[in-house]
Length: 167
Image 1 (cartoon, rainbow, N blue to C red):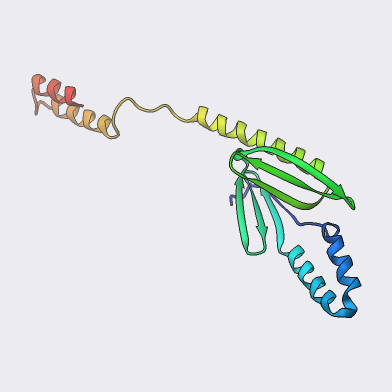
Image 2: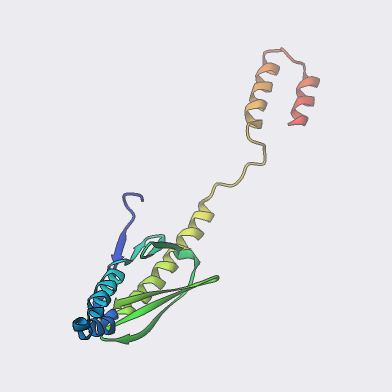
């Protein structure tokens, strides 16, 4: 990651797992609740979303997925409950849901703005690309070498023109 690249890390709120925590507390006397609380806490802590200038990395447990911002076609905020919701990122080939985010509408709008900025950056990069030479790489060096030989009188005009035509 370059020094000037910005990044933000988001994690799901505990409210996204409210019902799991609720049933874990209720079932604590049966000892299943302790396992359910531990499993829910571990699941919640294993999820994170790292958003940079060019991509979004989704970590869910041991699985990590990268999504380039330029590939995102749509970012839609999902339903909200307990003040948290989800953001669904749609690309041409897949759909990924970022769960448990506070203020998902603002996050989806921010992601859409970042996608627009990334597409503009890519377009500007294409336009700024230097035009391709009409000569093969190194052909200018060979032409300079031939010109030097011709100027020194080591080859005559006919040989110079013939070699120049080959280039």
